[in-house]
Length: 371
Image (tube, rainbow, N blue to C red; front, side):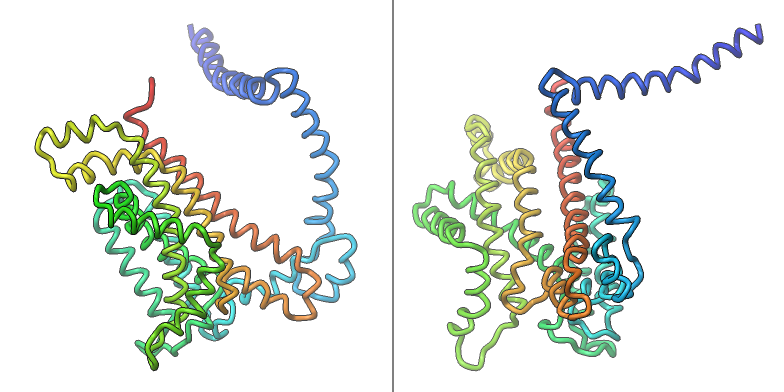
């Protein structure tokens, strides 16, 4: 009896492994070898990978120089990468022209913003208090970077840069552009001709010009329209330009979701006595925003990457900080390694946003998913 029980336990312990292996084989058979064409493509990719990966590994790892030694990097330039440029210039790459002794301040701001982003992905934190925490954190980040309070040395916004500036520009502009986009999308569907015409005109004008033109106008042309003696900080002008540009694109995504809602639901809401505002807030907007989550996230990711254009107005975010770091003639030739480092940072943030968008989409569609 004891032997039978032992054998049955052993069989049960082996079963999950066999099941997982079979699932993996079924997945490969379905996605990689499902037909002649897929099999040929898979084999070609495997052959190319086997021919390229050894050389890439030798260049990136085996023959690479990781110490911040420019002489060793120049000696190994023909055979390996020089990751020492990152070890030597990472502070400029991450914080730009911010004063060296005060770089603990942008470091604290970056850690706080990343921590709050991770915390916001936790569903239990989706409460009204989270908005207050975000507002307090962004204001605290601004005052910490600016200084002039609590004994902190003042630092001009022109000297802000690197990753903290990229995160602040993208987060603040996205937070301000979302309500603007909702109002513009609702205005384009309004029955009031003046409001509808103004919203259409705003979207068409802003979408008809590239972002670099909007930033140029906000930074160099807008000050000429102000009264004499009145000036607005360049960072504020850039934030306004980014907000208007992002709001125009988000408005079209929201409008697409609004048009997808059946008119019968609106008529039914009016039939039970709901006002237009109540209908939009309780019935139309929740469904419309759920439908356009992928489109909105695509715009958000694009905005995060478009912050690199603020370099033309003298704000050195991530890519601009890289140019500052590589201005040193001793490390200038190793720009590929620096670009790969920046690409890795952008990829981590954009990929995280993409995965979070997919999780949000599955969570919101749980009630409408077919069983």
